[in-house]
Length: 206
Length: 230
Image 1 (cartoon, chains in turn red, purple):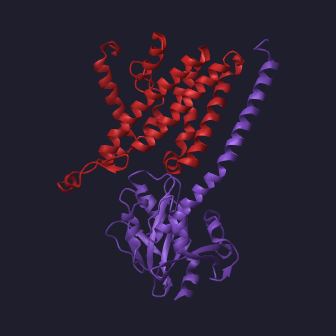
Image 2 (cartoon, helix red, strand yellow):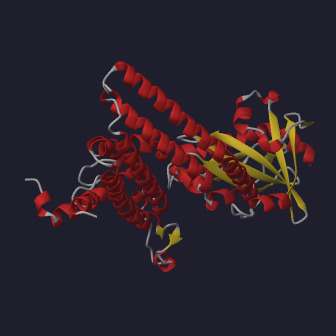
Image 3 (cartoon, chains in turn purple, blue):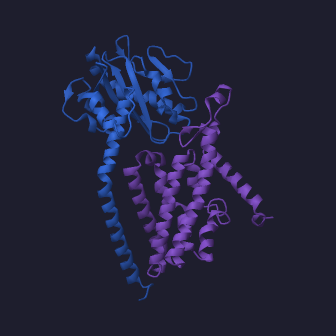
């Protein structure tokens, strides 16, 4: 992997993270992060769609008529999302019920359109693939961190397994119901942004 | 080739759409049998949990065969009519006038005694809620219940799916002094006159009211059938 490709792949994981730096794809980050499992499946789905869409658009980039390029991108994304949705319904039915409409909403996820328009349309398939996977993983990391705190503090579980021992409840510990509600995802995301900016002084605005 | 000409654009769009449609049609056809199995198993599992039988996606089909010994369809007069109970869409039946409704009944045999399982369908706060209620052989006492929902608020209305809520129905009576009265879902501590009640979900008021209304609307047409069991 060349230096440039490495940058393309690793950039979105921290310095150019789609969720906490570019603040894209926030909507789904709020909706599916009450528990780890749907967050993980959503992350995998989005990463798969983004990687494939990037490669396909990149392969088609020299044929796409400029005036309908957004429509072409949307058709490719929509087709991939429907395929993912159908596969989940067939092989991961329980999870597909949890995600319900949010899989369909990957179509409107800003990260997808943003990466296709900004990167895949002007680059060869391999860098486009790395960019797609990189951004997908960057999105996934944030989703999983948010889901970790929301599930742990909101339900006392992780991936559905009880991790806070019963004895804590006996001593008066209570799950924080507020963590289950969507606004807390925004606040946790805010905290992550805070930590990241504090560690990278060059990202701080005046 | 001029990529900005109208002809090129139109042909490009047409070919792309046809290709994508073919791929999607193929995927849908290929996966449909698996998806339909999932939906059927899901329904069987819900019916089983109304008689407190825990199942997994794997053993549901076998358990269903073991426990559900009979199923038939009745009308609001309590007479049996033709039809396959499992494939009746309760959502559509609820919308019809009571006299025209056909009502599925699933008969389970648990430890030698018969339980009658009746499907429920209604509206919660954000979307549909549904469930199954199992009634003892006397047609009056509730043996068990299970509820499900599409998009109720997690931690609030969605709590109706938890055993803590559904288990309250065990032992409640649908009839009061020989008349159908349903079971009310009331604010914690409140008691209803002339009918049995269970505690609502705190913070899930609209969903709880939805359950209460669903129980009445869906079970009222069974009143004649249930009376005939006594």
